[in-house]
Image (cartoon, rainbow, N blue to C red):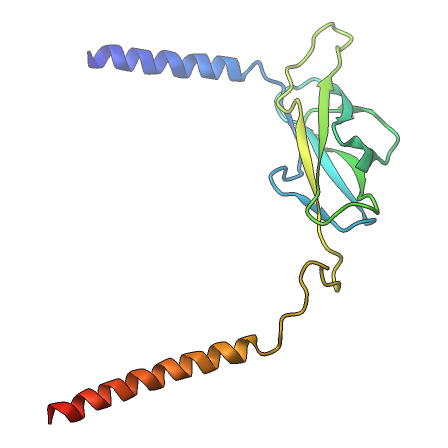
Length: 182
């Protein structure tokens, strides 16, 4: 029984190792799980770095933006990138929030890199086939949101006075009970 489990685990590890060698990975440096915060009308430039760390051959990748792509553009004017083995390639992007965007709106800009066939006829398997860069619309620094009207200035004072009255009432009750016992 134990021998069968060891053979099964060894077989799974061998298959995973062999399949891993078939992958020509490229990745990017942008942290895709964090939104890019922009206020309405703001433009911000970022870049992603393509890397080919597994395939000793040069990989050619075609970039494509989709879904909410109107808020982003590739600033180098290229859509095809040559990614040599272990040489990072920078892809420059510019994001502009629409001037009429509302605070809290989110744009999900799709970014996909697809490998192109090489002259030898082969084609790598891409580790990153597509990702989404979330653009979150935030309020412009220094501006108060319109929904949050000024609080009445007495709110904190009323809470403090209410707590003081409760404390005084508790102290008086305790003192009265002590006097009655005597």
